[in-house]
Image 1: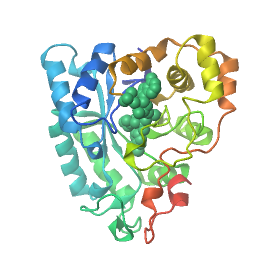
Image 2: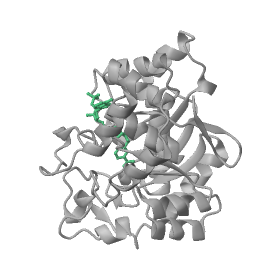
Image 3: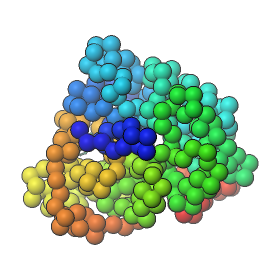
Image 4: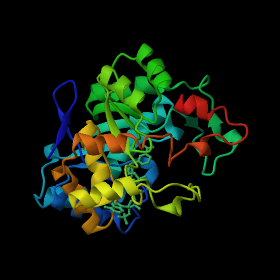
Length: 316
Ligand code: NDP
């Protein structure tokens, strides 16, 4: 198992299981299959609507002795409708209760965007709370107190650009320890990755396979495919592995954590085995040359007419 290290010396397994769009009725078995395959890092979020089922699976695994709590690394994320400090503390409590855990290993502000408590997808302009009214720096104070209380061993953010990280860092007492962002060869985010490394912020790459499920209704019809890309398939052919494994090996070799989602037992195991693959510097260069600006999770749902947020605010 490969690990990254936080500044205090604690470790995060580099490869984790993603759980967005892992359907209720499927995610229980996916978590069991993942832990049995060797995964120790599970990426969750309140908004995924499946934390209570993940909690059932974790409790089963812990009670059966398959794994010890201290060997697991469980991440969750604070949803945008709970950015007021009191609401944030309640949201953490609910997540802990759903996951049947006493503490999280990592808790992240899911997006640098605040919405009203009862806002529902798709958002309209009146669903938002502006950054002037509720800056994420206020939410960060609550995150800091969660870390101090030990309910979240590590704290961080997700979908934060360099300008937003700078704003946060300027007022922070405790530094964010993680930034979870979309990252793959079509969106390598070199500058953001360097900025995070320079500030001792680890990076987790989300949607590493291109988030190929279209059922969320957020997909463009003309979106490119990572798994069917010729260069990626060519490298997979040369290494006798799958395109997904090439993508995961790329993320691991760059030094990010990476959290592919699957509810399929075979693909869960296949993704885990990406840790055994080594890409040559020539293969890394070929993948680097694919870099562009394609976002599978483009954030446009945060910018309906009347929203105080823009894509420029979001991505810098
Ligand atoms: P991924 O890039 O992980 O792709 C998931 C899709 O790929 C699923 O349709 C899955 O299907 C399929 N798949 C998985 N393994 C393979 C394989 N070996 N070969 C071919 N297809 C495969 O997408 P996600 O967007 O889900 O990103 C991963 C995780 O990142 C999320 O689940 C979530 O935890 C996190 N995330 C965080 C965000 C944030 O805002 N912080 C935003 C987006 C994601 P199947 O299940 O059938 O195998």
